Image (cartoon, rainbow, N blue to C red; front, side):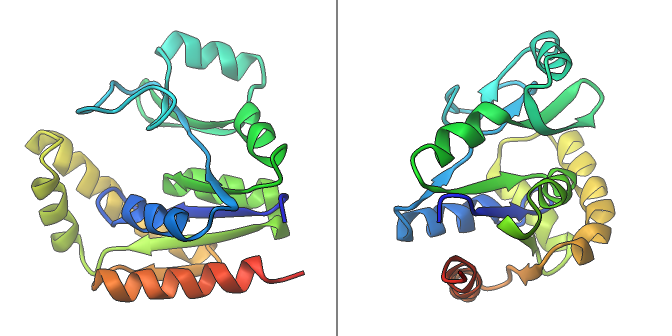
Length: 189
């Protein structure tokens, strides 16, 4: 089972991390892949737990070293990516990898891993709900929230590139659907 991959992608504020954490609590054989980023730390995030925080220069060096499975410059100078060392670390334990990544990263990971991967696009019921969730989260300025909402509108266009689309309207319903999709995939031979 250790060569399987679960990919969860969504516009910011769709509830992706909440659903991923729920699945992690149910599946001890599934391990979170910590992404790398060049963005600043938010709140009480810790290096190696939320992300591997790299400077822009460090990130560019790792790109040159071919250290990433995939990476994306999401905003100018703001990179996100999946380190090959994370994949190796998790698979060496015989675990299934779960990714919580941006939409383009999710599409790239699915291309890279093919049939070994299940890709799920999580979407908020509307852009207005998304905006409200980002405001309530309280981690971004109104300017950053507007950038995220604008980007979310673009990202919705990628939904059909995923194996499943999961609308996160009622959290308990979204949990149940995510559990069903993941269990089905993990039980395939």
